[in-house]
Length: 572
Image (cartoon, rainbow, N blue to C red; front, side, top):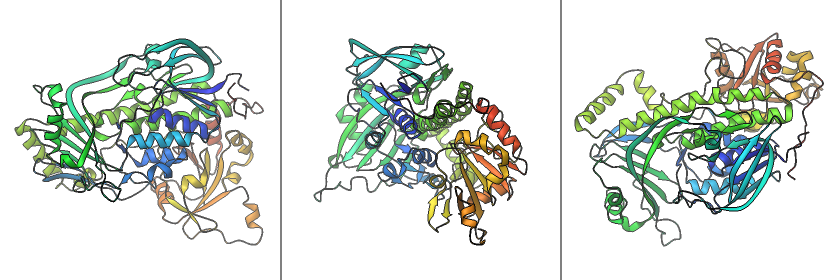
């Protein structure tokens, strides 16, 4: 058993830190969260989340609660200054059981996540505490922290008191944003580009209506619009709860103070809404960065979210990148703390996540370039190129489905799992259809199979396929699952149900899961292993020995008979 006070110290209580702490808490690890701000910031930054991130929130056990407050299934469109449609993206399919497009109000999201985090007594949150220093050794990390007045998000430095405290943890995660103290103390640089282009962000809230709700100030703006106006590139973003955001691009000669003035803000938003029907919550000129930390891990200290990568806001993926980091890292920390995996598996955190995060950054920069064209001649060329693309067979559908969005698929040779062949699914995020339980009830796949490892037999009991290797697989505490194609569930004699005790048996009524596997050459009778993050670890048909050997080798599991502590270390 670990002698450290905590399994993990998480620095930062933004969306990444909240998601990380919730996932670790649900996985049974003891966590201390240190946040330098004594009070919640209360301003919206992130506005969007996608189906992949919502699936992570589902793993964290909070998706239904937070999704209830989101603006769902909005179209996203690129329009000219006169409102003429250039491109519209809309997606009604839900391959992961969640909508692809979801707009949120960040203060509501963070407040709800912090409330839900209280369900875990082994997760402790301490506000008004800033990391002063840390030092690691072979067994853990000593973290020194002090009381903080916070930065106020306007002051350059927080004011620290002289009294410090010291805690021990097995791991330290810096989820403390773009100005990360953890990253700075590691001496890790960030590589990429800082853009001098300035944008004015205006956050609005509709005034209260007589009936107690919000007025209809934004009713005529139902969709997310990129207004490709060479004279004034604009972003118009609907948000739930009577909120809306506008962003306006400044020209090089524009004065920052003038653009932030009440008069200018009123004039600009009057192009779209009645200024007398709204309240301005924030008006701020900002620039943005497209950078990635040179390394995300040093021993037992790791970076996540904006501390590891900063994504421009033009595709709404900054927060979601941190959510994906949390999913990837949390189960690997659990594997080390509870299942005896080797520390070396943490090397795969960066090798798996960096390429996807960088691809999202590149796409965001590309979209910024598309939207913010200020030359009329170049704007006409852009419009003509889009017109042509949308009338070219094959390309048109790809554009409307946002086919350019980086896929949740790890690069060959850079992930934990069996090697992927040409048609293989290894290292790919599995779909999540609604499936039918044995009692006839529909359920999302992940809710049925749980948040850990899953060993799935396609039409067969995977335990029979594993045979003598069951003891080895028991070390990572997987769920054993059989998924049947629609209408093929066994209808055996009395007693067959008892024989399948301990097995999660499901029916793929839509054919989405079995069909996906079949398209990739995985046939009935195969065994499919999903990692806790629902990426495919490997598949086998007949001899499953390769799966077992890969589990032991890639997780660095100790020889049979050696066990990690199966209880969490409680805070002192």
